[in-house]
Amino acid sequence: MKLYLKTRPALDERELQEMYRIEHRGLWAMYTLLCATVVVQLLFGADLAQMGGELFVIGAVSVGLIIAYARRGIWDTDARPSTRGNAVYSALSAAGVGVIVLGRRANPWIALAAGAAMFTLCFVLLTLLMRYVQRRQEAQSRALEDDEETTTEE
Image 1 (cartoon, rainbow, N blue to C red):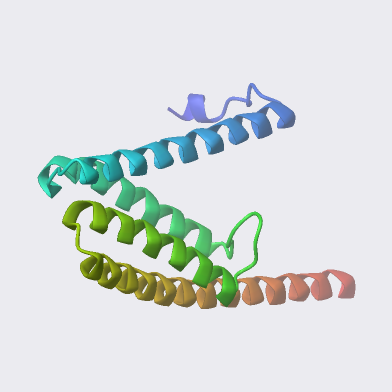
Image 2 (cartoon, helix red, strand yellow; image 1 turned 90 degrees about the horizontal axis):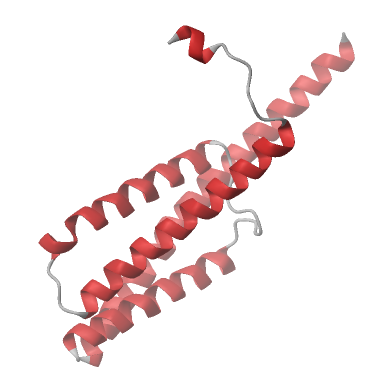
């Protein structure tokens, strides 16, 4: 095993970067298709026992990605953490849940209540996560400034 780990990489930096892009697109394609599968199963009336595997994978990947990004102070490639962004993402989630519940129950009041609950839950969780990521980013900036000061003093 040590011999395998100590070998030189077969890819140069450009090829490695391209491989990471391919893996990134593949991960998000798989994640999106898995979520779409769950939505379709819900609309066709599948119960939770039939969707257990998919829900477990979605949950595990979601939690893993959130923890990994937050620990490194990363929010998104195209956006900075903001209350407005959290409201938009929460509204989209609420609309999705509302449509699914309306499709399954055919009761607009239950769909509205489920959408409102989803909006509240998403908004609160995203706001807490946003605060944590902002703190991590500030700590990383301070550490970088301290490193720069230490380097210039030497």
